[in-house]
View (cartoon, rainbow, N blue to C red):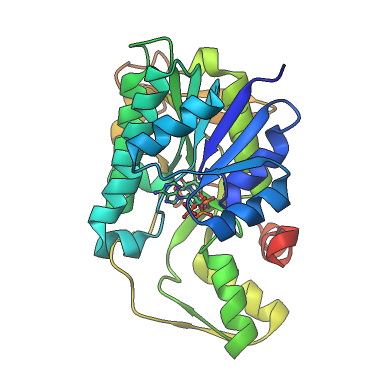
Length: 317
Ligand SMILES: NC(=O)c1ccc[n+]([C@@H]2O[C@H](COP(=O)([O-])OP(=O)(O)OC[C@H]3O[C@@H](n4cnc5c(N)ncnc54)[C@H](OP(=O)(O)O)[C@@H]3O)[C@@H](O)[C@H]2O)c1
């Protein structure tokens, strides 16, 4: 019989695609709050979907009692930077208390493995409430590892291209409706990777959990200057772009591994791709020597940017 794998936030952009990838190997259960989105995720993925609010520990307990998962991928989050600045209470409830709830109930129910999905906004220097909340999730999960049989780890992401509310679908909508793309930060640089690469990072972590439990793991990603993406967009699709006022909490560059984390970080290769692991409370034998920022990362080429902007996943076209 297949083991059960439960994905919190399983009805989101990433969660339902994780469900599609993992459903052959596991009995996958997706969870989310919004019933309309839950129905849609069920149709999209063919996986079982249950309603569950991670901020409510009794709801988490009920769902874990009913489904008895062996593996939990914790993808549920409120992830909009400016919203979290304006509504920090909601952000803490979902991203911090919700993560604690998942961790506590996972331990209580003897879940074997829990993987949290984090962000390059959680690395020092942390600039916004969303990043802080995800940094706390990383600490909670890594700190819980080793205390019981439940293994915890986190995956740290850059921008998943075309994900909900991210720049590419927002620009696409603006471009289609007005021909003008408004942006807060042409001088910002961002890491980008595809949803397939984002899913693969979770699969790699699951396959190598014996090595990486208690750690935050990321992978090599290229970055792009927002202005470069916009110039290529306008050159190929017409229209124009213009600057708008910045939003609270934004920073020009993101980090996969920050300065303060270097002594605890090391590189390891999977499928020919450099990955980076951080163990907060252990010094690395071969530490990284330079922070991995979107400023010093290898840039996406023009051709790679074209592929990024012209190939939204089918559902987002
Ligand atoms: N997409 C990116 O570029 C990116 C980058 C770095 C990290 N991440 C992380 O990756 C994860 C997935 O991101 P995504 O792009 O798939 O986001 P998304 O499309 O916005 O999905 C978020 C999911 O979380 C659920 N959720 C929100 N609040 C919840 C709550 N209180 N209880 C239970 N479920 C809740 C949402 O469903 P309901 O609202 O219906 O509950 C939805 O299923 C998040 O943790 C995010 O922080 C994403």
